[in-house]
Length: 228
Image (tube, rainbow, N blue to C red; front, side):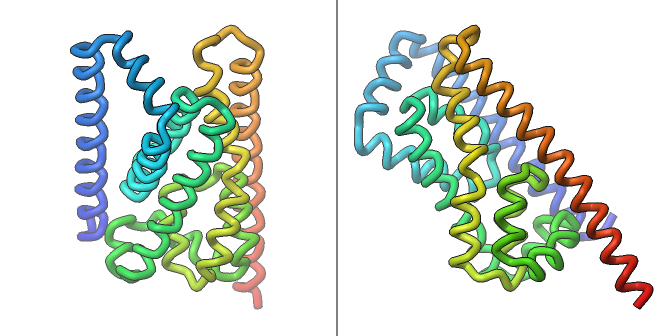
């Protein structure tokens, strides 16, 4: 096992430990406080401007720490409802993605490659060649993990402004689906919750099909260039 793989494993273990600690801590708090009090806290946050601002920055920070965005997005929908939750999650996810992008670009390719291992190598050339369109497609199709792509894009020459716009536009469908799941979770047998799950399944299927087509295209391009 190479040194970079060892570092990547250590980072993954630390990240997993942090997430587990957070989940356990939340469970303990929930048991101590009780569901009624938690509901009151959620209501106060949802009606507070500072609560909304805090949520956006917390979401951005968790994104940069590579925490699963789906959980935060669903929570945003549950706390703030669909429309407010959609806007806040979209803003937080974009800020976190842009922050990770510039951290990666600032730190440099060698350090980030050691952190991420070999997960970004296959993306670099394609993103460098297609720029805005590549980032937009990778955001629309859940092919590459959101947090990995944030850092991987920073290793390529793609323009920061184009990356930001492509990210903002590309994550809209996914954000909408997860926020809708959260905002309708109180009625799991209701039509909106069921439709949200169907939409999520559709995103996964489309992403899988898109990934296979992109792999075939990349394979064909590699074969053509080797023949040349």
